[in-house]
Length: 437
Image (cartoon, rainbow, N blue to C red; front, top):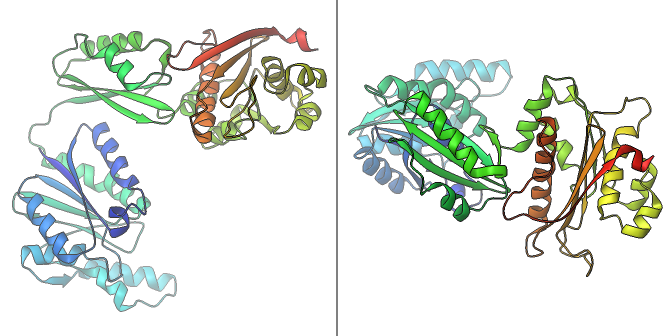
């Protein structure tokens, strides 16, 4: 079965907004065992829409059309579909009743612009939108079913999950069994990963896919009609070949993996951030239940805060600077003890460094990063050097990822400091808590 997507809108075509709906749909389809073969982007011009609908309907089996169902003059998807099919737009009585109720409950006048959203191509099947004023619809045209959804992300996602994917399943006569396993990595480049993996023997029916997004590289193992035992062997082989660069399975970020490891346990965490400015805490609190383990976080962006809040020794900063292994180790310890009302936490993370583009020196250049993790009555610290040609945001994002992975490894009983590949490690240190009392 050939699945496609048509994304509509001048703002999408011109790059004024990023089409996150398309990326999300691709992942959802893959997770459901389907693959999207093509995606087309078209603006809000009636003739272009008619042309694209006609052309792709002759090639695909199911097409999801996203956008162009709103009340404004540039929302032309329904009109274009009617023109392509050479039928009239017809008022849908069920959706008219829905809109009258929706607007009446809110004491808002129902205008002609809103009524436009009740008119669908003759013969179309209405698709309910439970969270918005624009209904979807589907029509059979040439060889394809065209399934129309609004562009508003939360409306689109609910309709895809509750209606589009079930519809796709209903149209499949013989569906391949597709299992997708996602292996998240850091510190491995695409060419390096390809060199490690693509010369190996993989089961027939298994293909490799790659997705790069800072600071991660995700490997997809796509198994079509491959039995479970072969899949498990292939996954284990891939993990072994990726080495320390493999950091999580079927998770989009290391924050998600750390949250999974901590949320249902009894361990607690404190965080001290300088270089990362609160991003570590921000990524964790995005997950419900993070209050079960995250006790406190301190953004100690200046030396005075490090000294007063985290009890970093002023002598350490004077002798070694705030961008040093000793300083970041003391920050980690201080994070667990800076609140006398909170019991010392099991784990702590601390970061410091120079993200640039200015602020570096000959001895501490831009890209110098110090990360420490407190675990099992020890503090493990490492100094990594990132290229000064990298952006400020890249340096901070990769620092967050490495910090999370150090914590992940500590939780799993592994040595917190790993060999990733292209991440250059300059120095390491292991401190006993007693070293700083």
